[in-house]
Length: 248
Ligand SMILES: [Zn+2]
Image 1 (cartoon, rainbow, N blue to C red):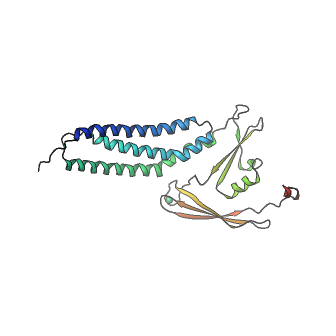
Image 2: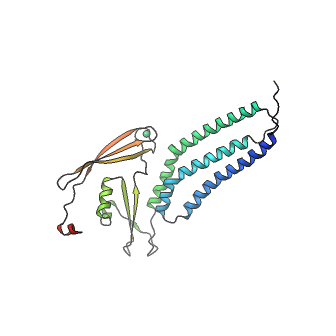
Image 3: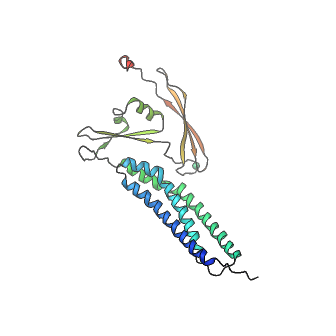
């Protein structure tokens, strides 16, 4: 059976190619915008947060734009073709695009985080420069830093999934405190091995008193394999308040 060739195929080719270039340009611009914003951030901590929150999303959006662009481009050099083959071509192209999207999505969700994690760790422990002296500051250990953290921060660090890093300029005593939240940060799942285990809820089941320790439960869920875990933590006894601070 001979099909009648589509009469509008030249116009189609023309506009599909233009649309393809627009989508491909948008994909490039999306990544460009990401890297320009990242480069504009001076503080390592700001870069850390920005990468942590945006990098995978930006790559995903850019990939989708690129796939749409590539699908259009692949169908914009059509010679004489009937409606039947035109539709078959599109169904095939979209199927390939969807398979690629699923593969990219999986790579970004489950393998790429290992790479992000490595860079985040480097950013977190890169020596901070003191604005007073221009020299590198010192990162205090968990024991040393308590002097610089107020009681609320210490309690938060002890109990919730929060880490404070304290950097000190030993010459001038200038300090810089950075807060890292465990909720944004995934750990390795013991079930599937991916970096997809996150704290979803923290609950104090027994309030600590001056006499007794309290109890806290952290709930974890793996976004890959749905593995669930909960861990019980002791919450330190309340420190008995000195009488003179009670008025504050
Ligand atoms: Zn898992």
